[in-house]
Image (cartoon, rainbow, N blue to C red; front, top):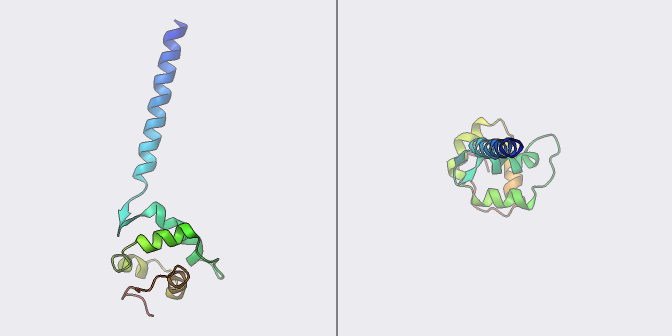
Length: 102
């Protein structure tokens, strides 16, 4: 009986871990060539009164994103366009989306 209980416990644990991984994957949606989870890497660089410079990970995400595609989301985000502009400049992005005043 002890071995059967152990097998059942291990099987249940594997099922729980698998389900939690699937749920975590579902929390991220892919839009404009990047996942929403990856976009969060840039949040500190565009929020607050004196945001820090973007991290290399943020710049990687920003460079991979289709910025024109993100325009509807950026304009509704409530983020100050000057902070988005600073992020682009700090990441070396030269093609600016048309929806932001540059």
